[in-house]
Image (cartoon, rainbow, N blue to C red):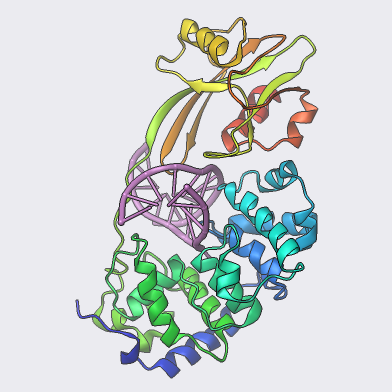
Length: 362
DNA sequence: GATTCGTGGAC
DNA sequence: TGTCCAAGAAT
């Protein structure tokens, strides 16, 4: 494939066509209401690896609950995790609060406006830094996400593997030449909006594209060959057992997950990996070893749940058990809570399903 | 540099 | 039904 670079296209034409198209075709999204750096920041964190349609209701609720940077800084961990419940990648919101608190203490509550300073904040990487700087502060900084790499790989005929981390640098270097210094916000958002609405992964709408005349891939009919992206390995299945442990007062046993790693800080029902589904002996041994529970366990599971992560698949069998006390061998806190209290804790989606299906019977 | 970290939707 | 994701960052 013959590669091109930014110098070989009509930069002025590309900029004006893209920016003009953005102003006429941008979606009406809640984080575009104004350019408050905090609002932009929250939206960019939520949008990491997450679709716009998924983010919208979470964003509206989050901004209602934490309208200002200070409000988020003052919230508790349980509050922010509950607000993030169901959105995934939970370290995002924990890092966001850490960063917001640093802005309060180190920057007098004002989001910094240089790449060096803003990049030093937890959870703010190269993309998010560029997005906030360009959208909130009109700085001519690149913001390279998956959309931008897809669009520019086609326009500039770049065939580096976009799954490789270092490939992002290639696009950033091109963008320092290509970005519109007069309107970096509309330019960056235009690239992403174009990727979302027109220059899509499959069946791109080249006939409707505002930068068709500047696109190398379209000229050579290569729009379906770009970008080049290597495949990722598939998730490994694990057989899990989870337990609805109830005491005579009608309370349920829940456990807070570790502050690090998978689903960090969320709450869950007692669970562990098993190697022989429905083995009453293994289930009872596990309850005893993991939670110090001497309990009767029904031999049949009351619910089966598949929980798919990027790298793991939990196949969860849910069982019912009775106990009056529990002692964990781990560092994680245990609590007995009523059914009504369950809704104040943040659970992974698989454990939300245990509540709705096996406890509430919906 | 490769792996870890969620979830629900599109095809 | 399985695959691939979608506005990435931390480790």
